Length: 144
Image (cartoon, rainbow, N blue to C red; front, top):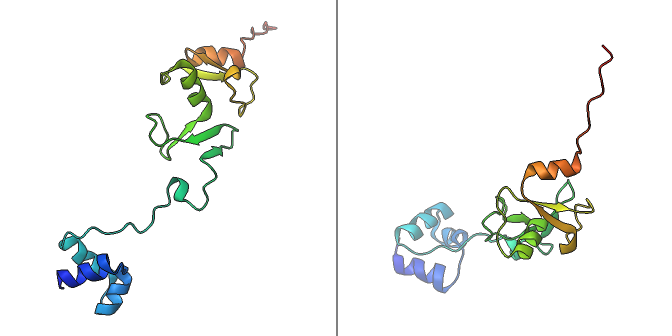
């Protein structure tokens, strides 16, 4: 394989690996091998992340529990898909810092997608959050 010809076809003429393979009568895997061997940078096949995704809807999604997630792949606490719970972002903006792992943002009116700042209250831990949702109920006296 001639490096200069490969550079001309792939870089200068912007032909695909498949098209070059058809010209030389080989597979696109072979062309990919030679591009790597000659240190010719390959083009990405697809870049369908974020706004480049044809199903992009503005970076907000709602999960099956009713919580809204915002696409923030640079956030230190994003999930594996790059999303962060919107109510956590609102709480962080109110505090002017990232939330600690122990801190829980609570929706005062208990509507999971109502993320107005006046509806979000930051609680120190999960225990305090649980006590709001499941108040303590004394046991009934035993009949025996």
